[in-house]
Image (cartoon, rainbow, N blue to C red; front, side, top):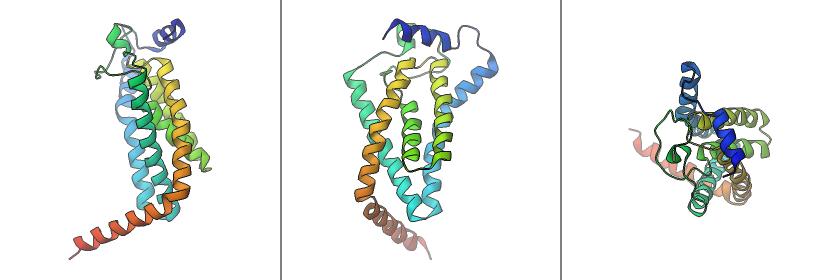
Length: 191
């Protein structure tokens, strides 16, 4: 952690007397915006076209790869969260685990990267905007340093690229197998 990282954290952190509306907005973003990602993936799958289901598969795979990379990075480069060292003000409770990298930022960066690489630019832009807001909120509420956010973005890029390469090679057969299983399960449940 550099002095610049600490200075940026303190500049964006809520402070001792945050505006209650800004604080509520930041807390809502940091707790609930992440739920948009699985909802989007479910909608892609339910819409039913093979192309959308392949995109859903690529997103799930990229997220899994990204989370594994994040976990391994956190083990190799453990950095305590700001509240663990008494820095700034924390507006939410959080486990005292590794601060670097930010998984919330990673999730939105993975989605934005995958969507951009498959030329879904509108959805990629929306994921990036929401991701930037979530990244800001994570610093504002006191659970991440700014460089944690950068770490999440950096890990998202290879995760997205690996997932898309694997999807191009194996995705169609895996999606067909899941569709077949889904069909058998839904037929079994019908009277």
